[in-house]
Length: 512
Image (cartoon, rainbow, N blue to C red):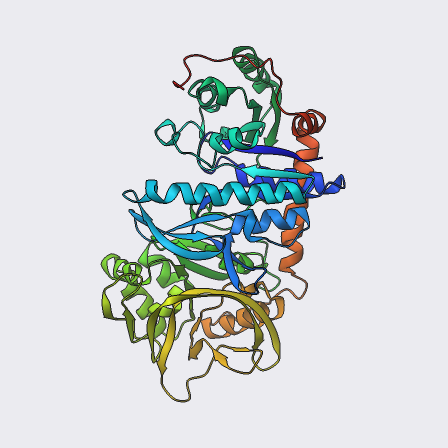
């Protein structure tokens, strides 16, 4: 077969990514060869995929997670267009894994035909190679100001003949109005592909919800395929840092007598915030994102995460008083970690004619290094060791590199060839590697050292925490939720045969 489905949403963060992953895991359990697809993603959370030419390329982190749900290796075609916002007005364009341009409101129309052609071609190749492709939309299909030229939502569905389901987040309120309105704002040809709904994040008595589901069916002629319950354990591999609350996950009780408190600065252009998720899987480690200087002062470990705009976010740190809080934390000998852009901020100086165009600016001066930006972007998988013998895997996505360092400055990590990577000076640590803390033994040793430096003698790492297993449990949970709470027989018929030709038109509809 060559089935397909588009999972659209009433809003961003309605649950499209997790529902797509759950459907993928359910289909894989049925023995279906399934792949995920998102024509265009806008996110600074990305994963590195090795392309057929051996070079590293980027796709959205959510599509890498969905690939794992399918039991297949990530593929650049799973997310052919990735937009990485560097400001409120411009985004880097990553096309089939490679950064090729910068898009603004002014030049998007010129670029859009090329982006759409690439996306359509990638989907056609995937449909030829897999039994089923589960596509994820972006934002909402009812953004009628963007419908002309759309190739991500109903434009994609129309082009590929994809039946579409709309997922809505009931936790935000107004879910019935937004579902009805989503359909009613579409033109007749788009409406003909919207087959039904899924409600996400429901808490309470389903019997109280049922009258609304019945009325929605009567009003639209379309069923609700199921109601997914609120599930606290679904927080790994967030597509965007805004999906996080203040505290990541549900911190398990410590194995020892002390907790470790980790404060992660929520930068305006935070990138790959998923790096700290591995820390949050450890019992006794409380990880929270913050923009409050006082919370940095109380933390055992402060993390400066990745940034798509290192120099601009460094200026923001200074404007908000967070830079002073970071340097005071380090001056007190308390642990500090910089990852990628956060690592670059720790330097004495940053020379950036590329990303910000601001030339040379002073860094925080907490590591005796200089950072220089190169127009060529480093995108690659990385493997090596820490502390001489601890295996570490990760990936790199950055323009900046260490162009000068004091002689004898210890490295935090080492590549497989023995070359040093990152830096450490006292309690200050920095690395360009994303994903390093998913390596279990390295994470345990790092947290043990953090506890020592922070004076948390009662903190004990758990010897049995495995991050890969935690991620796999999440994917299995998504598959379980789909099997238990959706009408999978009806969903299978929809994927196999498409929407009913008798779906009614809901006025007023957008003009064609």
